[in-house]
Length: 323
Ligand code: PBG
Ligand code: ZN
Image (cartoon, rainbow, N blue to C red; front, side, top):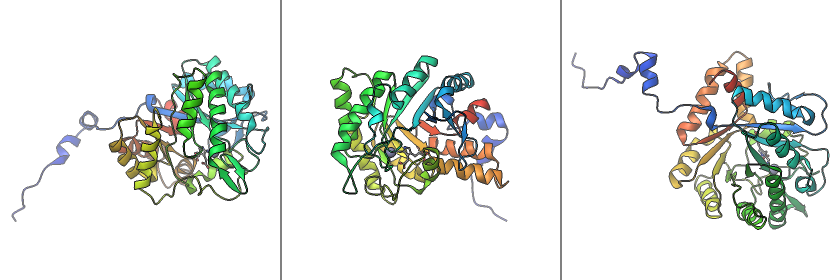
């Protein structure tokens, strides 16, 4: 038998040391951000049923929890508040001493070296659960921009290292940049949720954040079927002055991560969202997959696609495993 010529790729896979020597993508805690839910009224940790292993942190336990993360090697967190002070516009988010401000100041006072990213939105603070000001059933873009600027300034003044707007309003970066600069906060970076899809994978987050949302966010978040528009959205936020861009969700959008990686030189983040977490957790609990391996594979794939920073609820598990 005459076999045509072929290459022997197996030569570099013969031992684990060889395989590691030739690894193109490596995970590091430096690149991971742990999203956390801080409940201003809970008296104990509240398990989130659709996200096994994730808890709402009572505000009174925030300091000890942050100390635990820091000891484990977590470098960055993204804060989400569970508010008992909801109204129709989310006023609490721009109150001095409101939950957004308290999360940032308490974390920075506890572990100043931890990077605090303040998720900058309104849906956890509005009675209707939308990400902005609602008028006649429509989420108003430009009035939401005014609120965004106010919230960003309060968060940054309270100590947030990074402002991360997730409202999916047009102009969110420009409005926040202008407000920060007008208040002398010229050195506070904006990490925009620049390409954010109206995804069904946010389901568990709605339970976690106790969102009151009726309906959906399709009038402001992106159509998951659109690839060209996904790049336009991020490039527009770059033009408005974003310091870093983001794709959300991550795992089902690796093509988008790659497209944006090739279209810009800005740092790029990707958010492995609550539904991605839940799918892995429940499949592992059913014995269908090996959780630790699938977690590394999924996060590795997001990095390989081009993400520099990965937001993941698995960050603490990975830290505890010594990554
Ligand atoms: C709200 C917000 C959402 C997430 C992050 N910020 C939910 C949404 O847009 O409906 C999703 C996070 C997740 O699912 O893990 N602005
Ligand atoms: Zn929102």
